[in-house]
Length: 333
Image 1 (tube, rainbow, N blue to C red):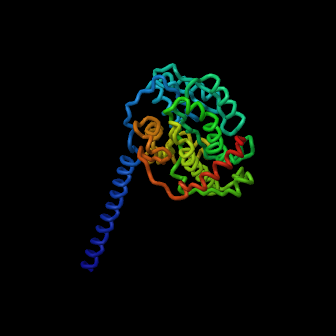
Image 2 (cartoon, helix red, strand yellow):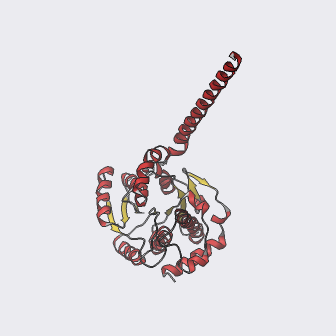
Image 3 (tube, rainbow, N blue to C red):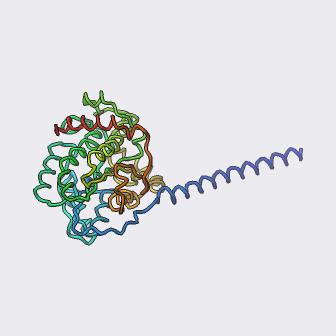
């Protein structure tokens, strides 16, 4: 009996040790993830931007706003292109105050409306003589349709930025060397391009499951990477370069369209495992500012480093077909 009790005690001790070791392993893994992945690399460029003009879409919140603050501090004239006038002008005052620069302006831009995109470009060309950097930062994760009948995520995340970039290309060329920076996502790895779906304007509207919404979001982010790939080919010899990037999982207002209870429940977790907007804007800043980055034009970046992408994200035929279809959908041809 004594021997049996001793054996049981031994196994209980081992069980507690194993449980402790697993907890310790989890804590250690979480710590290193936070230190290496979440904190990540920082943009190390000391570049000054006096005399340069930058457009940042979706810059009233999150990484777009932090990007605007950093570039304004460096002396750039920053145009904050946002859908909501109220939120945009309030954010503009914040950026001025935090950066110490008054050379910051708000211009209305609703990427869910091709008419609004055209109005923005027309106003910009009339009022601004330069465009040195275009940062296509705005993005959303929600269902719905655009003013023109496209799926909302496809319309805002890809098509609106595609049209905006093309309408401002001449000003970018005139200001060369200049850059286009497209904020994509690691989710592009799970995306695919269904040209039949796009032709029929069936880029999911309302009444979709989480899985469907995640798929269409991933598809739109793949469009960003393919757009950058094709844009690079068309810009060779112009002095304009372009880059796409994954900013990291961001703990910001990107979740403002998600269920409030879920957001509150997840907040302590996302605060530890997700990047802050300040951390999340570092790769955008790297692609915007890093010296001698021109040879890497057309590439995809993550954590301030050029990364290889799957074949589907650099397929010449798909990128060209997507470009031509986007031209047709946006009314460029």
